[in-house]
Image (cartoon, rainbow, N blue to C red; front, side, top):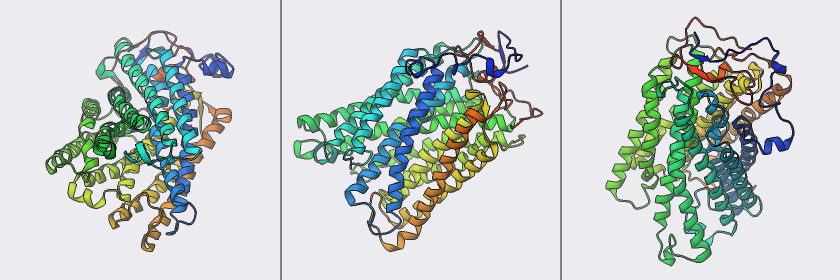
Length: 549
C-alpha cells in the first residue's frame, strides 16, 4: 500500500496531454496576473526571482572582473561600492530570502498536505505583488545612481551621508518585508488548519516542518527589520536622532536591531533547503529518513535559537567581553541541530540503494558545501579568531558557503526533483548531472580561496589589494565563470524541456508523498477528492527501483 491513499482513485487511461491542469485550465496573461492558484503564484515567484537573480549576478560579475587585478582599473571606488551593494541587496532581500518558501513552498505546500490551496489565496497573490513592487523599487535605486552603503545599510552613513537612493532602496526592502510576513502567516495557518485527514504532525513530510519553522521566523523577525528601516528613514527625512551620534543617536543600536533580524534570516534561507534535502535523500536512497523526529525538532530548535545569537556579528563593536562569551557559546550551540540533520541524512544514505540522479547529485553537493560553511562558522563564533578575520574575505566565504551555495543547491535539487510534477515533462538527465558538477566545482573554486585571502588579511569591500593576493582572486574569478555556466545550463535545458521534454507519469521517481498521488501537472484543484493518509511518511522499501528517464 502506498504511504498515502487518495479517497478517490485516479485513472491513467486518459492521455496526460488531455488532462485539465493548472497550466491549461485558463489561458491569457491576465488569468496569471489575477490568479489565486498557489501553483501559478509559485511559478510567478520563480520567474520574478530569476530576473532579480540575473541582475544580482551581473553585479557580482562586475565585482569579480574588477578583482582580477590589484589595481582598480575597471570600476572606480564609487562604482565598485555600488556594484557590491547592488549584488548584496538583490541577492539577500529579493533572491535568497524568498528563494524556496515563495517558489517551491507556494507550489508544493498545499499539495504535500492534501489541501486544495493555501489558507488565504488572495493574500498569497498580494504577497507576490508586494514582493515584485519592492524589487522594482529597490532595483530602480540600484540602477539609477546606485547605493554605496553595502546591503546592511549601516547607520549613520546610510541615514545621514549616503546619496538619496538609499531611501528608495530601503523602501523597496520595506515593502518586500510585508510580502515575507504575509507568506509566513499564510503558511502557518495552512499547516495548522488544512492538513488532510490522517496527516498528523508526525506524519508530515520534513519539507513541511522546515517550511513551518521558516514561516515562524518570517512572522516574528521581519517586523523588526521593518521597524529598523522605518527609524532609519525617520532620521534621514526628519533629522530625528536615533542612530547618528551627531544628533544624539547610537549607531550600535542599528547593528543590534539589524542583526536581530538578519541572523534569523539566515535560517529563512537555509531551513527550506534542509527540508528539500530530507525529501530528495530519502527518495533516492530508497529508505525512510533516519531519525525523523529529531530532524523535525531540530528545525524548530534552529528557528528558536536563531533569535538569540545575533551578537556574534558584533564581537568587535564594543560589546562587553561577557556578552561576547555568551553569544559565542550560543552560536556554537546552534550548530548542534544543524549537525544533527547532516548526520541523519548520512545515516539515511548508509545502506540505502542510492540512485545518483540529478536531484541527488545536488543534494550531495549541498551536504559538502553546507558542512564546510557550518564548520567555518565555528571559527567565527570564537571571539579570538573572529577579531582576526572580522571584515575580511573569510567572512565573505563563510556567508556564501552557507547562504548561497547551500541555499541555491537546495533550491536546484528541489526544482529538479519536483520539475516532472510541476510540468509533466522530464529534463535531460545528462545535462542535469553536468550542471550539478559545474555548480559544485565552480562554487568551491570561487569561494574556498577566499578563506585563505581572509586568513591572510585581505579586507572585504576593497577593490585595491596587494599584489600577493592576486593569485587567489584570479582563482575566484575563474571559479565564478564556471559557476555562472553551472547556473545558466539548467535555465537552458529546463526551458527546453517545457516544450520538448519527455512526458512522464504522475510519479516518475517512485517517490512517497501526497503530491505524487495526483496528476502531473496537478489539476487546478490539486486532487479529485480528499486524500486520506494511512501510513507514515517515507515508507520506502529498498527493493523498489527508481526509473530515471
